[in-house]
Image (cartoon, rainbow, N blue to C red):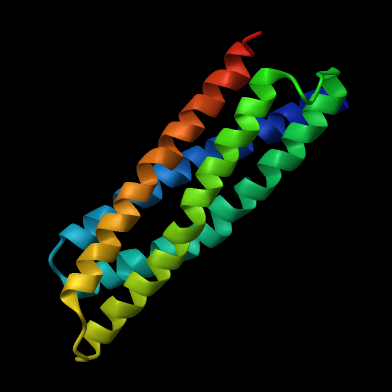
Length: 155
């Protein structure tokens, strides 16, 4: 296998992990929050936070590294419009993901406190969950658009 094929395989696999774990984490987290059970919600928040750090973060680092390697190996001009659009969309996804992780940690900690019998601000918890949910949509849309750009490579 030549270097280009190897890097392209890594890039495709990491994009699959990034996108797939994003959807999976969102589903698991949301189902935990909607369960009505503090223990289930805490478990979901704790598990998704760990999964984000292991899978999403790792794939999110590999993506631009392998992407820039592919641009170089394929001889693309890094300033082509479709690539610039991909960079911007990737930054949009990152800009949504960073506060999402912070929110997951705060939500996790609130559920832990509730399990420990501490009083929590339920309104704040709900607001954080709604904000977490809303930030997922532009990240999802941005990554779908990046997939399209990588496949179509429009002029």
